[in-house]
Length: 153
Image 1 (cartoon, one colour):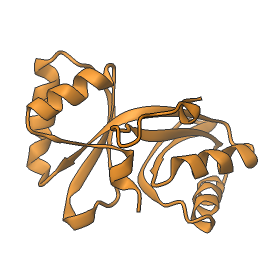
Image 2 (spheres, rainbow, N blue to C red):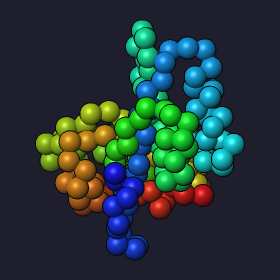
Image 3 (spheres, one colour):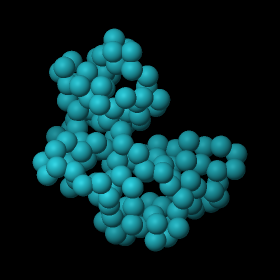
């Protein structure tokens, strides 16, 4: 389990995403949002992939350890993964991000925006084939890579 792995204190921690399997029925998203909210776990990024029978609700939260416990306790099926997140001063910088990744020949699986960031900044969550290389590439391109510690409230 990724959250059980001990990390160096103060070391960069990638952003944790939960991909929650949800039946396509009225109120299921509300149930997930309510569960996290009542326990003061705030959703900072959200994306939903919908199919006929079910959905994948992708969320990034401020406290992933607490979210993981809640999802297990309430028997939600989910996968936890690490993503790269970048902070931008304007939407025009999206091209800088994609250009840097293309030049390094790093595949982007998907991207979705954060709902909120401090100081009016934009942010993107990015699923990539190689997070370490992407983080190095983006940092060298003077794009701010943010980690889990940067989104905790």
